[in-house]
Image (cartoon, rainbow, N blue to C red):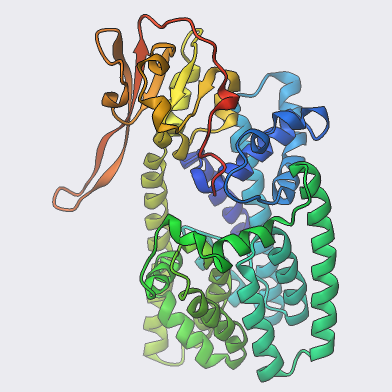
Length: 471
């Protein structure tokens, strides 16, 4: 492992320490990791989060099981000497996941080095490692068909579109794949993946299910994803800019495709995927992030082409200087964004405050708390928390009277608010950038309220509804 690969791993660890918490999009997988590590898949299955809060559509557990299995050994070793905190366990899970992504990118970098030389490989890891977001894509045709099929059936249904554009381009344009071999590979891989996912996920959900098929039908065929908001058709053009981050990446992609025509085998399917997905009203950058490593690879080819010709012409020399200078600048920008991102998890910060309370009783966690960092790793004693969203329940004085504490975005939501309730702590979070003052603005995002005279009441958090597993 060379220095650039070590820096990539270090970068992931640093980002994980910047923002150790997660938001609602990652909630299902994070809770599943906790349940696998702490409850197992036998009799403890009844305590798994999805059995209590199933969410709108089922999700696959396979990714969480793999990450949890890898995290089990280091967590167990640490536990032999001392009991790790919930945050430490959560951080371990996140670093393991980051390590898997890093291993994939390092493997891709080594392949690039083998085929296109060390300059292209080093530029790839430098450009990719300084971006704010990273993930994996492969461009070797038959290997891509297998991996994309597995990813589609088990993990993310939207990759089906990328699989389709990749296969279609290689089938029509490059003739590097044949119809029958492609069909055979796709069918065998798809059926095998469906059997694996169907068997494991059906056991954990306790009913026959193929999660990604259910999600695809719900979000795409029924158009229910629009319930979470819509964006204009051109939104992904801006998301690509945000994901690439490096200001010279786009011209480098164009130059890389011009200087290496085979790069079109990656570029065209990626752009077609983004274009087709732009027709979907609901848009999130995570739906198209799969194309970023491929685009970065093309940019690295352009960078290497400029670098190896820097002595031939002043334009090559100046362009190389710009590219080299952009890398540390992008790294600084990325880490600055990482520090700002760490301010977007008031729910996680609140849970650190709550678990430090001496002998805390029933505590209510509102929607903002649950969406911005609260997790089972941080909550510990799950029975001590109430996460109801039922407006009719929240409107009753009796509900609030039985609580000892409440984490709320505004004290006014407490219906029995009077001299019995007091603010004991606050969590500040990101509230924008003051361009004129060149500073980050903060605002109070959550209040920790204490009920000085709670009334005795039966508390059953398992009867409440949660947003934790919605997405």
